[in-house]
Image (cartoon, rainbow, N blue to C red; front, top):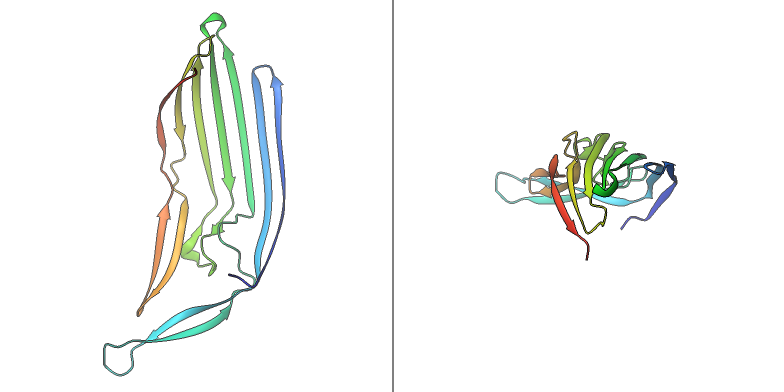
Length: 182
């Protein structure tokens, strides 16, 4: 619903097969995303006299220059896979993948309380496949750092009080996954 926004960036991604058993991947993203013209409003509530009735006053504001929601300026990923060849017993694949995101806002107001600070999230896994590859067993851990990213943040003007709502991503999780190929 914004009047105008300016969005540009650059992304580079690469994957290198270092050996038959080793793969390295990396990506880098730079993103510039700002409102150029965005007329919005703050709702201000007043209590006239001593009654309980509320009067709403809308304060028009141009949010030009604010960052658009969920747009980290920098995102960097690194990944590494190594396959251990067990001969006729099959293979074990060890994987590590990490993502860094610079800080970003979850709202167009760019409130500090609705800002996700820069964070890193790392995933690890070990996967076994027999030589005939008819099934697989994988042990994994996601979000090794156990940092719960802010995935939702919103502002609501509700009567005389302003309400900030937050929603957070998944904490560290781990488990075992079994797959069957047929």
